[in-house]
Length: 285
Image (cartoon, rainbow, N blue to C red; front, side, top):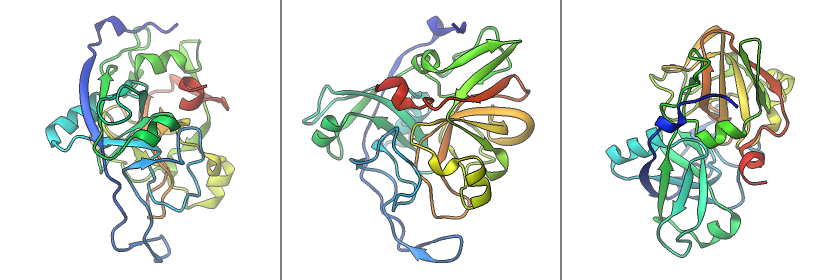
C-alpha cells in the first residue's frame, strides 16, 4: 500500500445545491460552422451515469448523474476546490434526504461538482436539494514519491486504483491512454485543483487509433506529455492521470473533460491498460 499523510488530512463539510440544467445558447456552432441547440450542463441526468458511454450523446458537455453548485461564489470555490473524487456526498433535504453517493468530477467554466447517486435516489431528487460533501484529499502526499503530486484525489479512490510500485516508479492502470496533442479547452489554466480540461475527438484518425470513441464517464485515463501540477501544460516526458467527468462536445477545442488526479513532470508514472479502471467498478460494483 502506498504511504501517504492521510492522518494529517482534515475532513471538512462543504455544501452545494442541485443546479438547474442550462440549455445551450441560442445557437452554438460545430467545427464546420453548423448551428445547433442541444441539452448541456447541469440538472439531474437520469439516464447517464459513470460507467456509461460519454461519446455520441445528442448533447454538449453532458454531465452524468447529479450536478451541484453553491450559488455563493466564495462558498462554491470551497465546494469545488476542497471536494475530491470519491468523497462521500449526502442528500440533506427533500424526498431523498439521507441518501449517500460520492463525488465523480469537477467541471470548469460552469464550476459544477458532479456526483453519483443510485437510480432510486435520483428519481426522488429535485432541483435545489442540498448536498453535503465530506471533503478530504487536497494536500495528500505520496511519502515515497515526492515528485508525484496528487490533485482532487480522495484517500478512498487512491486505495481502490490499480497501482503497482516497480523500480522507483508507479505503474497505473487506466482505461485509455490519451496523447497530449489532442488536449483542448482548459489547457493553460493556472490551477488543476479546480475543473477539468478536454480531450478533443474531432480528429477521427487519432480518436480511433487510441480507442477514444469508447470512452466512458468515470474512466481513469493517462494523458502523456501532460504536466498539470500547477496548471495545465505540455511537457515532454510528463504524465497526468485523470478521470473523465463529462461527455464529448460539438464545439471546436472541446470534448470529454478530464479532472486531474495524479501528475509528475518527469517519467515516474507509467500507464498500462486496465479495462476496469472506472469509478463505477471501484465504488458501485
